[in-house]
Length: 232
Image (cartoon, rainbow, N blue to C red; front, side, top):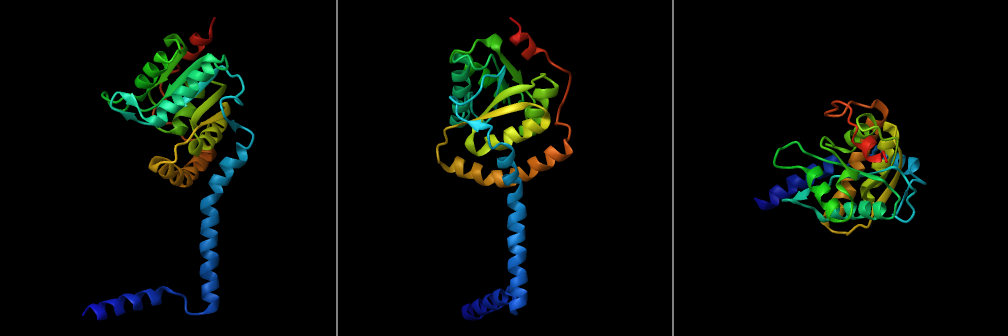
């Protein structure tokens, strides 16, 4: 019985293989075309950010640093988020930025990325009145649009991991924020590999966002937190 079942499976597999040379060539061309189309959005993010990504030492001076949320472990930032916040604190202490805008998820009362990010920065030398919280940064596009339209950010240094920073810069550029991206050091763990693989698909959504410019999940009224923090 087992042999018969294996034979049926093998027969089914053979049935999926094109029988003629011409059909095989068409199948190969189709696969190659799909692969190229899948990689085009990633190529776009690299093309538009070619000279706009580096480390903290290469980052130009800008009024605002934008730190994107990256998850919490209870009341603490994940290691990935802590690395982003450390880079923001370094830029602030070096005098390269004057305000840090922390943007993340606060969709539940018991879960607030911006509050945890703010507290972490305050413990690492950034004055509380130079930190501004965006509680509706549900994804990268939302954060970029809200930075420009709600908080009035026109030029910023963006901070994220290397696998995400190019998409962030490309989207903020599309949203009207003149951006430079700081890609913090990556630990090549399971999260890094997952993030890198996810970017292939996320880049497709990013390209659509950049073209069609949808409204963010929540827009709301304008806020003057960044303006007040920048006022001497």
